[in-house]
Structures are given as C-alpha cells and as structure tokens.
Amino acid sequence: MKRVAILISGGGSNMLALVRDMVGDHPARPILVASNDPEASGLARAAALGMPVAAVDHRPFGKDRAAFEAALLAPLLAAEPDIICLAGFMRVLTPGFVQRFAGRMLNIHPSLLPKYPGLHTHARALAAGDTEAGCTVHEVTADLDAGPILGQARVPVLPGDDEASLAARVLAQEHRLYPAVLRRFAAGDRTPVLLP
Image 1: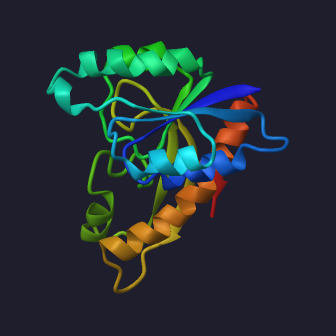
Image 2: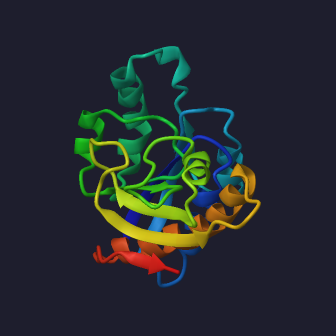
C-alpha cells in the first residue's frame, strides 16, 4: 500500500477528490495533508475527514525558498510518503526538493501541457482562440510544468466562455483525472490516462 502526502495552498478540492478515492481496493492511502498557508480552508476540510494535517507558513521565510522547504520537509519526512501529490500547491519548489522525491511527485495543471505552463492558463487559452482546453497530471521535475505527462482531460471552449466558466469546467475534469492517474501510478503503471 503506497503512502500519499498531499500539498495544498487553498480550498483543496483536488485533495478531497484524491482522499475520497483512496478507499477499498485503491493501491494507496492518504497519510498527510500539508499546506504553505495555515489559513488554507483545505486543512480544515482534510481534518474533518480525519486526515493528519500540517502547515508551514511560507511568509516568514521571505525569498528563502530553501529554508521554507527545510521546514516543510519535517512533517513530510515524518509521514514517510511514497508519493507526493501537489494539489493546488502554489509554491515553486527548488530543484533540490524536487530531486529528493524524483519519480514520486505528481502535480495537476489546468491546461493541456505543454501549452500554457505557469499561471493564467484559462485567460491565455481564451486569448489564443483555442477551441479546447483541459488539464494535465504530470510528474514533477526541476523544470516548471515540464515533467512527463501522466494524464490529460479535455473540455471544449464554448462560445461566450470567460475565465470563470472555463475554469469551472476544467476543474470538474481535474476531479476525475487526478484520482484516475494516482490510482494507476500507485499501482506502478505510468501509462497516461486520457479522458475525453
């Protein structure tokens, strides 16, 4: 049984989708939900499900990412995760941190990578006149949003879409895709999950 730690920064809707899926015959179990924001509402939501939670506020560390990550490592390493899932975790991790968990860290991104790495993905898709958008689960590497793709889900861009309507449709697919990818990945299968 694989042990999964989930890192969040906000409400944790993808975290909830992952936690709720890790039951029954699932090859993994959630063992920790951690955040860089002690006020993240996802921490309370995780605790309500009986999950161990931890918070390491990034703000006192200023621009010293390595010091923040050293503090974040304490609860992470204590939990002994096999897999780390970034689920709306809004901190860019240093190459040293990423290397420590190489091949064991996943992230979900709200675009069809390699299109639109980074922020403002929905605005960029709309500005480009794209006819479809979607989300990608990928392995985390030192290059931002550039690791091997483990799954994608597509949604149409509809006439009259704005950022909010497109984001809501993509998020619904994120909640389907991430659990499906984690289930396959935890079983040792890196074949990409492709949802229509």
